[in-house]
Length: 266
Image 1: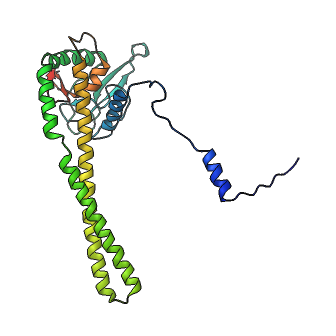
Image 2: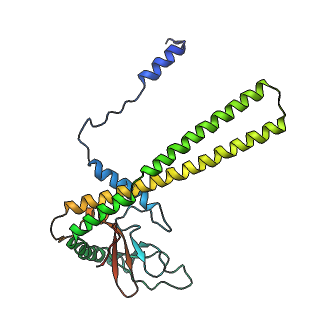
Image 3: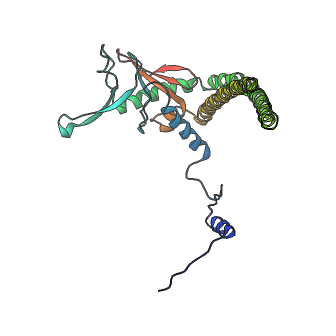
């Protein structure tokens, strides 16, 4: 048995890193799902993590049915009576947690899907008008040009302030100064920089939110345009692409609010 002592210099290490590098090639093979569907799923996953009591579950109905009494979200519950009759129902997650018990009913998945199909056909009946109104609304409300200009102006201001701060630090290191006066000027510039940075971050968040909404609206329009004729069976694609949420009421009504803001009863 021989022991091999290897001496590695910086060039060797660089070579090792290079030979162990990973390379990612885009569009090299046919995708499992198309890019538009992938982006729509990512927006749906992000949506489930937002909002009060949003449910992060993977079930199709998770985070989609709202209680008309308390505004909470429905979740799945298993009834064990007896084992051979076990069934899964959906009820308000807050039904027994609030001082006043919610009176909204239990729902079963099959009924929700059937009633959604009724509602989506009402939406499709006015499809052309909905598409025209939606496209006009997108053009008016989802333009980020002004915000992007504002963001760039704030970035330029931050760059100038940072340059002034760095110059002040260098000058203080080379030339004797009154340190109290220096600290006051330094703190003043630092505060201006922080304020500009906070404004820039707020604008960036606005731009991100608008782009998210635009993506959701583009998904809605694309699926709406693809659908031709009456829907006869439940469609998971229409559920995910068109529906924002459903609302269950104590009197048994179940309404469906779509991503264009329209609401229909199922």
